[in-house]
Length: 130
Picture: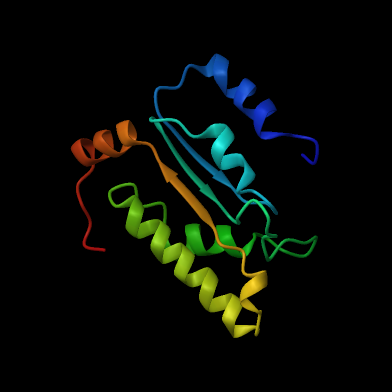
């Protein structure tokens, strides 16, 4: 979906009238999606800052480093989303350091948890031991 913009995606979501949303954007420069899509009822995880590439992309990749760290590592833990993000972010950093990547090239995944969704999750989800 190379021509899909954050604005276009926001317009696609609008008719759904979703009360709460969880969005995972795993793509290069995906941090630019954060400002366009964040609201009080949304959790957004992006694989990189708005000025950085994401790693693990390619025709031979089953998933990016970010999606691997999130889904196979931390797991989509909605009972403790802050810890989930931190664990995912730390795993990305380990992989970037393991290949000798310079800090100026690190991807810096981004995160937004809207306050209304945070309160709803705290009331609705049992806390895990993470």
